[in-house]
Amino acid sequence: MFIDLLRKRRSIRTFQDKPVEQVKIDLLIEAMLRSPSSRGLNPWEFVAVQNRETIEALSRAKQHGSAFMKDASLAIVVCADPERSDVWVEDCSIASILLHLQATDLGLGSCWVQIRRREHDEKRSADAYVSDLLDLKEGMVVEAIIAIGYPLQEAPGHPASSLLTDKVSYERYGRKA
Ligand SMILES: Cc1cc2nc3c(=O)[nH]c(=O)nc-3n(C[C@H](O)[C@H](O)[C@H](O)COP(=O)(O)O)c2cc1C
Image (cartoon, rainbow, N blue to C red):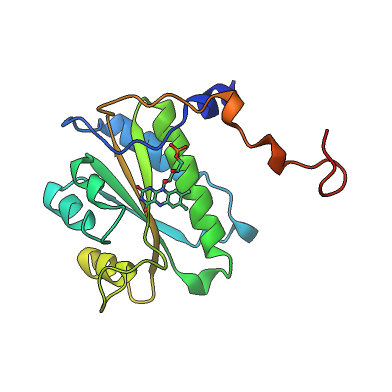
């Protein structure tokens, strides 16, 4: 059942020194390309990076929260042309989460690295840094990078007892079951 995948899903930030097989990369790409998007406009584009030096450079995109990516075997940069859709953020987020879930289903660890609205340093946004590094087309913007690889350590899924059931109302806000 799909819920079993969600029950074991975690963000994984430590990776084995082992490449992701091409057959798995193809499935990851297929999962992203099957994402729903508003009005079917598909404003996203993806850059799959396996080159070690490039991944290391991507891991320096921000001061916090991206360094762990240096050990990933694969980094998929999720970017978009904002001119194509006013809800490109939602569309990119859906593609990113489907990628994260597909990776989990393939026995791969993965973690979202936020790029949009994050800074590389005082002078440059993380978005501009990644755009320069990958020669993105003029006007393209970067939402996130999904770091992927074989997990070094398994992280247990969140126990049912930790779920924030208080966040849910029924029929009216605040009405609990
Ligand atoms: C929109 C978004 C942005 C995130 N950005 C980062 C990030 O930049 N660096 C990072 O290490 N984790 C990032 N994460 C992963 C979260 O920290 C993680 O999902 C959260 O701590 C819950 O842990 P879990 O995914 O293992 O349940 C991001 C997750 C989301 C959904």
